[in-house]
Amino acid sequence: VPPSDNFPRSKPAWPLLSLAYKLVPLLRLVLGPKGAARLMLDLNWISWRLAHELSGEVFGDSLVNEAYCISAALLSKHTPERGRVVDIGCGAGRIARLTPKDASYIGIDADATRIEIAAKAFARTLSAEFICGDFTLRPLPGILTGDVAVLAGVLEHVDDTDALLQSLHGVAPTLIVEVPDVEAVPLNWAR
Image (spheres, rainbow, N blue to C red):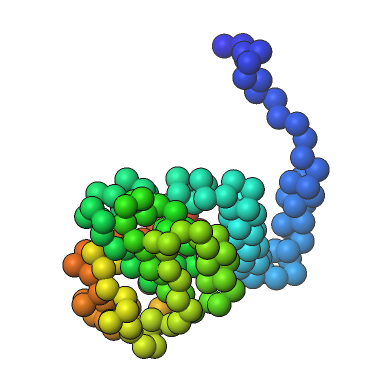
């Protein structure tokens, strides 16, 4: 079948890729197969992370909200009318943007810079509050109570996940947890 004019089969040459393929035999010779694989795995991880962060800057919240599992619809489904969302490890307030309009929101994060960014972004929103603190060191049960607790991208950074989850028992009757899918990238097995 001849290639379509709308979907040509030929690709433009990419000199960097050609150079990389020429360097791999040299890497194998110098580092050995295992060392060359380790270097490539590390470079893959670093470039993935940087591409992820830069894509977040370019596409904003829409990239993250489409790529991750917690959505406005999911949060709305589990938040009662005029309910309260408690976001543990809130970062710059991604979940705050997804919170139903009639609900209140409180977020806590140990990173003061991210709390400052979130507080500025939501300065005109009376229903959003941000606290700088480390919930894993000192749970704040009197302050952090609500109808839904959210852990988005937090558990993979915590040493004692069981203790953290147990400390959330009195925070809210519903807990929504979002963690990265480490099996989504087969190279994680090699790492």
